Amino acid sequence: MEILPAIDLRGGKCVRLRQGDYTQESVFSDHPAEMALRWEAGGATRLHLVDLDGAKAGHPVNVDALRSIVAAVKIPCELGGGLRDDASVKLVLDDIGIDRAIIGTQALKQPEWFRTIAKLYPGQVALGLDARNGKVATAGWLDVSETSAMELAKQFLDTPLAAVIYTNIANDGMMQGIDAGTLAELEQFAAMGFPVIASGGVTTLDDVRALVKIANRQPQLVGAIIGRALYEETIRVADAVALTR
Image (cartoon, rainbow, N blue to C red; front, side, top):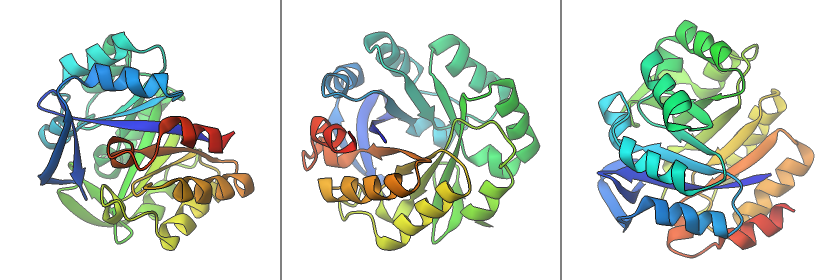
């Protein structure tokens, strides 16, 4: 199971939000590339990047910061936030050099387009499933739909996805751990056959251990994204990586 440190970008800075709330922001660094190098040095094998401004605007915004991160590190980077048309996906994958594009909003709103783009870039497109009370949230988590995360995922069982990234928004940035319900949901997604990455709520090494236990039963649980816990130093990258080995 891979550990993916998260770098959330807003205004060119590295920040974290609580439950996706743009009014509850903590700034952790003015130099995202330096942060990326720090996580790489700790043993991370992939980085999870989020363009928070892009998620609201509907197109990539923090392009300079993304370029600086990709140029600085040797490990691959995945990116979510505002990837809603061909040009945006092409920009990040073909131009900036992002390894994997994460698409959430348009997978719900334009499923045929999502299928087409995933087939155009096989193994380079991930489905971002962000859920509040089991329902899919879109547009930087500002809108909550009536579609369940499980229903949406089932539509794409035949699509060559890199991964499904599942976030329970209630846990994200709250430093309260991953609840039992979310752990069960992650196991369900993995049992469906998707490569699944857990996101939101990883707070201590006990959370990592709980995910590793699931991964031992369901090898399709392939990764865990860790954000605020790294910045507030309740988890060290090296320790989390050691647990997965």
